[in-house]
Image 1 (cartoon, rainbow, N blue to C red):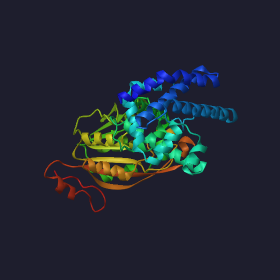
Image 2 (tube, rainbow, N blue to C red):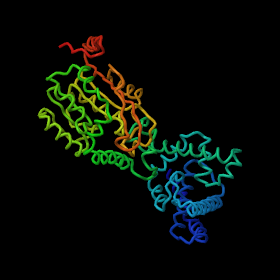
Image 3 (cartoon, rainbow, N blue to C red):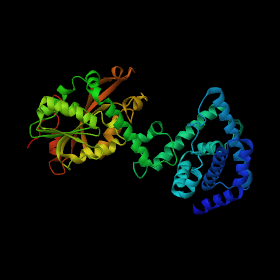
Image 4 (spheres, helix red, strand yellow):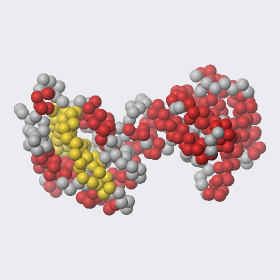
Length: 440
């Protein structure tokens, strides 16, 4: 792509003064004139990289400049009549500041991702985006070319922008996350779209959002749990697994020790891990009051558990998976620390459509898709033994928004890497639905 940036630079050297002068003749803001000039050449760079041939580049540059000026006038009119911000985040698909053009000239890999994303979406959406986002044609002109009404065109453009955003984000994050991670389905709702922001920094922002939420909510969390979560969970858990004093149990994302305190009377050692120091402080008080000296608490991430491989008999996580960027990574870590023939206990909310939960609860997912969860477990060779309802969580008492969330309980079994695997799996479940004690 080297020759493309060279061509863009050559055209910039030839014509940028004319473009700036054009904007300066119509705008009193000199800085805005330069910003718009750089945006014109950014669109040129993307156009060249996408393979489109420009027979008259000077005329094309001036046409784009005129369309951008018209858009600027239109935005100013909207601001004056509706008191809205000048920048429209929904339509600003390609970052529009004076640094972007230079950044993309220096970062050809970033430009390559933009083009890959552009080429990954259906052709009809590529054409719409080229007309509107690159050449900035007015909607009326595009409507005439496509034979569609303005309302239909606006909807189609919205879909095209969303597709481009998602494809760009998948490619931008590909060195960090699998392209089929669940979070890509709604990442645009969690992060402001930004071409140049480092993906590591953006993921850190998400994790910091979750951490800050739990740091803030820690003092009142137990009151919320007492009123919101399933009342019979403790009794059910105590009969569903063969707990004994020789067991070491991990409670990942322990929070204030909700599950840890349930299981502590039945096992020899409980390890609680959480990223929030405030939540762990509350858990420490609770364990001290109950005199649970065999419960140890550690600050850490569920994606990087501070435990040795094959070091626990049971790993539990309660309402954790929809708070992490990659549930798959957490499941892999849980699998790593559980001994062969050990158990995995997951309690989480079913997938839902309450899209306000990231702001209200620090969620990163709208619940957990049970089908996808079981697929991830199967890939890790974790056999699902039991799936059943786990009550209803009510949000109203906590945040003032009355909504209910159906929860599920899943118990899985880590396969033994040996000859006993099949024989042990055959004696998993008792006639009454409980799990039998393993033969020793």
